[in-house]
Amino acid sequence: MSNTEKSRRPAPEESKIQDYIRGCLVGGAVGDALGYPVEFYSEEQIFRRYGRAGITAYTLDGATHKALISDDTQMTLFTATGILVRDTREAMRGVPHNPRNFVAAAYLDWLFTQQHGFEERNTRDWRQSWLLDVPELYSRRAPGNTCLSALTHWETCKRLPGDYLTQRLNRSKGCGGVMRVAPMGLRPYRFADFAAIDAEGAQLAAITHSHSLGWLPAAALVHIIRRAVYFRHAMTLKEIVLEAVQTVCRLYSTDENIDAFHRLMKTAVALSENDDDDLTNIHRLGEGWVAEEALAIAVYCALKYQNSFSRAVIAAVNHNGDSDSTGAVTGNIVGAWLGFGKIDNKWKKDLELYDIILELADDLFSGCPMDEYSDNYDEAWASKYLDMRRPQASADEPATQLRLVMGDITTLRDVEAIVNAANRSLLGGGGVDGAIHRAAGPGLYEECKTLGGCETGEAKITKGYNLPCRYVIHTVGPVWEGGGRNEAELLESCYCNSLKVAMQHGVRTVAFPSISTGAYGYPVEQAAEIAVKAVTAFIKQHPGALDRVDFVLFGQWGYEVYKQLLDKRQLEQIVNSSAFDRLNRMLRNGENK
Image (cartoon, rainbow, N blue to C red; front, side):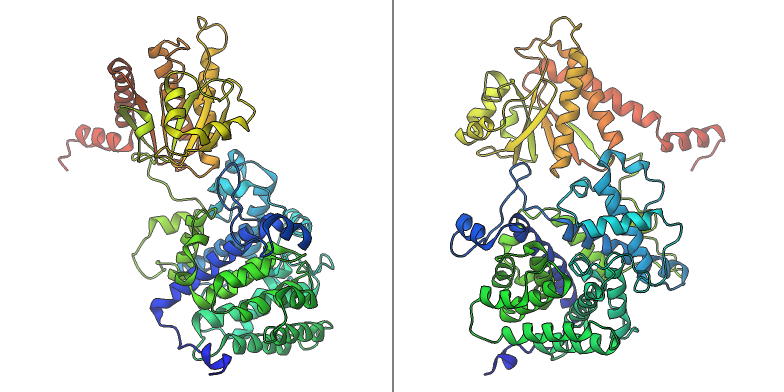
């Protein structure tokens, strides 16, 4: 049987399309996260550090214990939200628009995340993406200068252009355009021909990269993904790639660089069928810093290893060039071809923003559930794609639950992180601190030695080791000296900084002991009031960021003090709720229903 016959597949059933969409979006993030740690490594450095096979597994971040995504996946997610905002506007208002300016506006939100902190998100007067409410996206992961400068230009314009191919900002053909356009191929647009969707892919890349070799590959990538996800029929992946190249060459036949693009793509296809080693073949294609080389390397790896997601992305990142971008585009293609179910679980575990990526993939699959002619209303969808806000519970039903627990904090199994009332050395002590170190085992002590201690009121995070929880957040409470040495402010900082660390690491359930009320002598009643007030204020300032915060007390006296404070808070919430106002109006007006 020939390689072509082996790789033929039936047309996808509707039930498989979601799997392909998930595969494409998650696959791109996997390739990105695998390649990001070695993006600026030479091959010699890669093989010296990771062995002869190169990097073959995630390098987890020491602080978050996640495989970090780079700007490639960040911008891909903003591309998806721009497209979905456009589709929602059309569904609700019946007026079709090109996705390009909705996506450009979403990119301006991404630019905001690169220039500001998460706590500043509500200062942005006009937003186009609910991703502004995702704290992890405010991390700078080697963003490309061309993307930053081009978007800074568009930020100053009063009106975005209708055609980015003719509005040349630069001569850049970097891979920053092609690396982010995959979502354009993940909506069906069943009544649009391939050339129109391919052209829109080119427009999305041209928002920041004006050289035609910066946007021609984007058009081809969108074609490959759309055909693989929705319309593959009995085509092989090689046939899909060749069709994409031919379509783009017809569409832009007069472009001065079309022949160079065509030659390189034909070379990538041919190399995928020889017996030379991957590095030799990749060297013949380039390093991937420019868009045509990035796509060529991705096509080579995807075709060579089209039946193995892992082999494809590993080959795509172990070279001298732009490893995260070549890995991301390879992951997009092979993920769309094989589907989410064929991606090994090891790549899904510990991937940063995994849940957000899946959520956007599923939104791309389902499309807007509302339209202007029906009464159907989806509150979560409207929040994301009409109000541009991450969905939250209503004010009467707080998004974050406060729970009171009496027992041993080291035994909690339903929280992601527990807080340790540590000393400044972080190397263990008495009380809760000693109990946590004993339960966690020697690994915690070894990691704490690398942290350089911690100042009073600050917080640092480690793994949980032998504890049931995933993380330990260490904070140093103040010693009670009568209340005149800023003890209250420092204690409040312990709670606030611990929750900030939790939020920055994607932790949504946290358990606190009663900080400073043991050997440090802080009066329990005062400490409890500060704790509840600080946590409540943090929740109000960061709605939806946490699912639950526990206060864990070891003795009955402390438990009763906290219970009175939490009961009082609950009563205040009821009295101040809109439901209570409605009830008062009904009683005042003599209504019985």
